[in-house]
Length: 448
Image: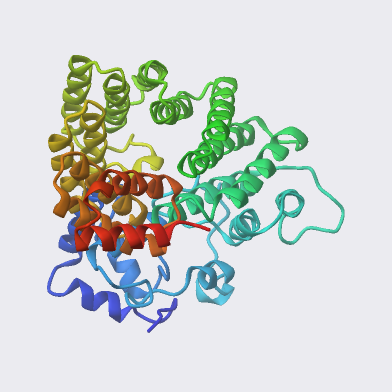
């Protein structure tokens, strides 16, 4: 049953059960912290949902609700499809019109983009470069003549495209997104190069374009296009430096460090992680600094420096233990205990301690929230790899089969590459029936 502005959301009310709105709001906040989401839920928000005022939650709340109620989609919780909610406005008669006042800056946690921003977001995700740029500059209801004025809606559309890409990547991996996301990035930079805008809009637009460059760079990275990824991260870093945006700079260096580690440039990985920490030191987010310490640990592990790695890991755990806060960047929703364990597993694996790496990878698999499908496949592939290297053949085979079961909904060449490595390590045991079955399925799953 779908709710509407005049229809209470009874399905969501049933999910609350006997808890008061305040108690339930506290449970929502705890669930958000469990998966690294930051939602400022209170009893008023729960009341707005149950009354039907909020017909569809934003993406952050959607992730939290799916975590709280596994197996239920938005419709099961009484919400309407997002495309319907964004495509309609509340009739003027539904509520008295307040006196005009300056529009508040939208929060990514409490509001959804308006109808105009949603049209622009869909153009980002489905159109070619020319169509996207035209839609962005014209707006959904503009005249036929090209308009080069860029305002808040266009800047918000860039941010919305970033969120959309991240949501799809969390669930399905990079394989199906990379090309379209690249079109989005071209459109965003075309706005910067060809549009006219105020200084305030310029700051928003540059920040959004930089985050979009990082997102496209990550898709390239996850797809095995490491040279492309390095170029996109460099573009984001240049944008951050021009804008004087330390938060964007720290994000670009963070991803550049991860990429350098995967590319075998371990010294560069350490330097980039340290530069990211320098940029982030006054941003007020211990969780961000924790992630950056993990990036540094990965670089030290690649260099075979166990002492440097252990020091960085200890710092990462200490900072993580300080908990989330309002200053945590929106892009860090993936960073929770599961990611902490997964990245630590990668460090121990690089140091050759596969038994210890397997322990952390197993913990990451157990802690991973269900909606981060790509990460669940990634951690399980890490587990299979380390178990195989530790010659724990039966366990490695079982983990490998679980990855194959997840790959139906995940398109990540990086995960497939890790699984292929595990299969190669298990090849000497191919006479065992379970290993033979895994190797057969793994071979058949490879793209043609």
